[in-house]
Length: 372
Image (spheres, rainbow, N blue to C red):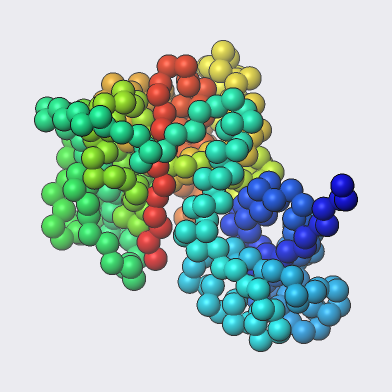
């Protein structure tokens, strides 16, 4: 039996999406290797290499200089709004096999990666949509997904109508007198300390999660985002009830080189040190488990989840004690993006919480959309 020939591919993009695409492609097809990342010639703020792989400008001179073979496939791993421009630039240089990673291809690769990765680790990966409700119907079970929206949201080009059991929740209400039309739920409507609306610049969707925790009563309750929604079957509440589901999380995302290093690269590294010091001093029984999880490559992003009421209560009690403590120690930041570190940390923390408690909670997954 001969040795299977290595297949060479390229990736257009040099951000975290491109690194994620590399992880999926090389894991799912071990004989395929990414040999270069491409970026538009006018972009001058990209690295020269990623993990030792060159980042090459899309120009005839650079393509020839780096020995790029235009017969090999190119995957476009950027935001969808940039796909058409990059595809045109690549085809103008003679590339024929150009493969934009749209939402369908991304979902396929992500699900296949997670399925195989979980199987290798002895973990269960179940999509809610693959379960059956057995014809069960308990009319007394109530469910609601609150969709975080704010006055700072960009206008959507994609059409979307809130689905049944979805309701918009305006967040950051205490920071503005402006009210979004046709939204009744506000994240400052609790009394006293029952809301943290004024912290929305730092805590992002967490001000909505906190409000949900303190001010709602549904049996199953969830949090989504105005441009990110779970893709759920219409009978999702019955499926949860019939199968004793404790929580639904987004299908995990692969990041490289690890969850911890991804945070350190994209955000302020010393803030992560403060977070891990909290585990070391206040949650010593969890410190080693947390380090192990954050050394891995998968987490469920976007602060999205749907949980049974008692499970949500337990999560929030644990989660907010951590992020409040870290926030008191780190404080505010002048940079508008980096000051959102409590929200960025919570994505990783929620993922760790449920992964480390698989023997306690029944976790299933659902895909999500991303609206432009």
